Length: 142
Image (cartoon, rainbow, N blue to C red; front, side):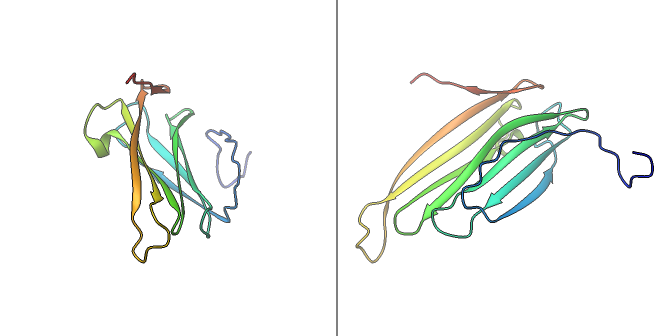
């Protein structure tokens, strides 16, 4: 558009299901060690009450287009449960440069009537492989 204050160099869309979130934030990260990406755009959708999740969506920018990346979600209800996910990119975990790791911790209160709450916690991990163009979840047999 001639005379416009900016030029659109690319666009993408995401299906976002709001679940009580009342505000958003966005942040541009570097490529976090993923070869073939120039930057990662992170969008956060936040809730302001117990039981309302905070969801993060990640989209990589190649310089000519966008690539969907795995996201994460966190939610808790004080005195009942929590679900926390943490994304670890190659520049953070220092392992394989094609590996994205999602660490997941789920906790449930053992006895809600106690003054000091203790949680039964289960930790799992999801792994994703980046081939320079797309991300695929790595399914490991146990």
